[in-house]
Length: 206
Image (cartoon, rainbow, N blue to C red; front, top):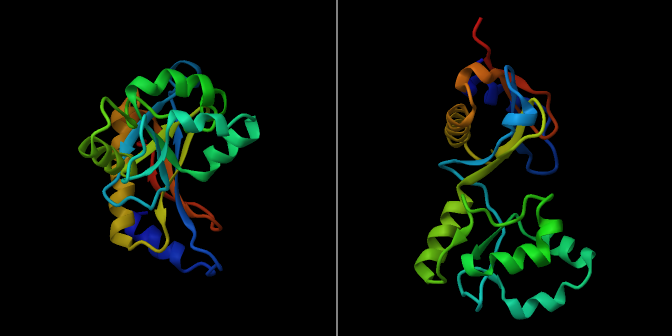
């Protein structure tokens, strides 16, 4: 089914009392999860709202900031977990990464909250660099898989079908570029809303 048609079908389902997330599931084939697991990013043209924070030597007016002086507030694991859950992603200035990893890494790592060299770390604390990285992070979707499927949110049902279609197309194209054998690694692609059954939009070539 075409993406546009699938979205029309999904919108016919029972309305919920909350704004549902639009999820994409890509089931893989000819893929060695142990050796080829992905840990990368793809970008979307229409990002959902993300709550961001930054680790800097001094506070920035552009983003919620955590300076080194603030590290003492996070003595317990539960305090670090609370911080990780408060934000969708973190950025950082490169010279602080060692201290960030030491203090927050054991919690942030498994929760996919560590600032990434691919998307999230800036060399200097200039407003221009911080602003640029904020925009980059907002448009980036993290791809991390440990199984034969990639599952990720591509938007909200409140977005237009055109915006969702462009996001879905962008992610599928981006994934095919980072998969070891491209389209030959794709068994099928499905989309769904939080509370609906999935609909297949891409099937493997026969």
